[in-house]
Length: 431
Image 1: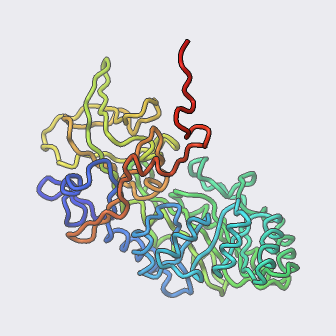
Image 2: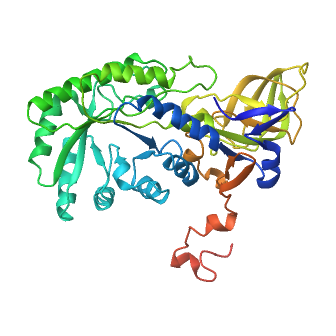
């Protein structure tokens, strides 16, 4: 469920007409619904009210400060995968004792940042990382809490680029080496082994891969406890899918929770979860304006002012978002196939092909649905295009929560070297 709906033929975000926001901030822009964020968090968290559980929102899905602060106020922790995300989570109000640092490539500087902050735990992914983290913690005369991220060799049956739990994927420690890894953590001077972690991929629309992975993790926890290791908690990762339009209907959070309780029966410690897309995905739209409509042979191209640098998922994953006019067309409006494309000079700058759309004139607004996750957070300034604004709506109010930079602000990040900055440098007269 989301809070974007048509009223009197005009698409609204909660109680605010999308067209009103477009007039104020120009296009393209992202629009987030507070009510949807809050509802999705509660729908995920409430089924675990009878268990000791911590929901760690995954900032890689959408790290906007207003989004993270909204969830922090509901009690969310954070799953971070970089020093920048750690800094961002704390700036948004999430205390370090509710932050888990994941990721296969943490640098020494990032480890030091997490140790200094006193975060809940590091999810370590290799034997080498154990040694490096121990050295970093010793340098600070501090201790770091560690969970071993285990690769359970489970195929999540999702897109190959977002599947992370198969043997041969770069993530996690092979399950058969977990005992060795636990022994190394136990022998480290500055590390405390507190748990196990798993994450098998993103955008899963079936529960059985989750259950297989979780049962393997529980069995491993039982083995390590028998060997004397203090496995206090399990981090079960994220990955629960959402509906973009063509996928199978994903399981409801209540069904997911029932499966988790079944798979972890007998484990008496806290459970940690790292949802991202499930909370933020349907809470956001990308709004764009039609620049012109072009025909080439029998094909109709709807050229919009959003581009692949603003929403990368279609180009990167072949993903398809539902696209619809902000002003609802007449019920009897004829629809015809159209390709929705951006202005960048690459064929890959395509959002949809053969999409049935009504007649559209220059200036018409289109909404890309389910754009709240892996949208703005993956954007770039390719073609020297400014990052687009992000807007948050709450009831009948809206606020720009990231503004569009101007060209001079973009240039201000760059510096000319002294050999180019001198008057007349680099210019040679033509013979």
